[in-house]
Length: 260
Image 1 (cartoon, one colour):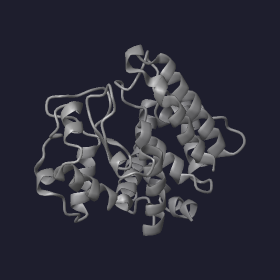
Image 2: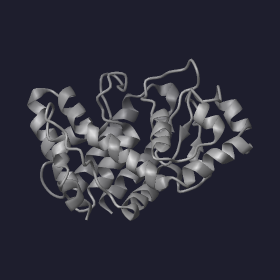
Image 3: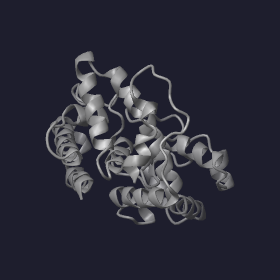
Image 4: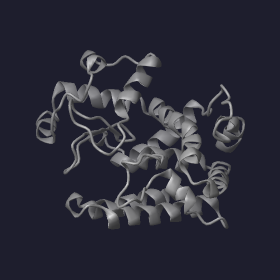
């Protein structure tokens, strides 16, 4: 079903510079919830506590089913911030946010220590309740990001690679269940177009996974294998102080779900 729904909207992302269709990626409530539940399991093991996380060694919390990044005031980093856009999206859908969240201009916790000390506070429980009750909307937010991903990737890729990337994108998208791995990965590791999201010149986003795919066999399986290689390379090239090796087993388990 997702295949046929996506096929009606491919004009959105066929190439850089083409006019986008107005319909967007269409998913039913049931489909949005199903994909959202998968993303929630991938990021947070499906737990409520996992919806509000702040990993050791990072200067931002990761919130919601997609662990959307929210930087505290005055802090930035190489990774793309996404929670403010989710907050705006939920408000645009008529979702009522807690007053403190609706008015927040930046993450109100300045560091991990204060975040963890506040973990069982009323404010944090309100945030988790909001995030647990909007799984479908968060999945639709992830779909919106996917809509814009292909034009960005084609613009950033070398001209010689663009046709391969476009072709592999549609091979996965048109496979049964193929929207899920594309939605999950772009929200997991980004489009791969940001120059700040590189280790030793190598990115790890959707662009790099599509560029590294085999063009034979099952598209979701080829996508999963390429994602595993890209993430392994990221860990190998990462700064030792970040300790990213500890995350690799979970990342591999995640991309393995793309072929289940």
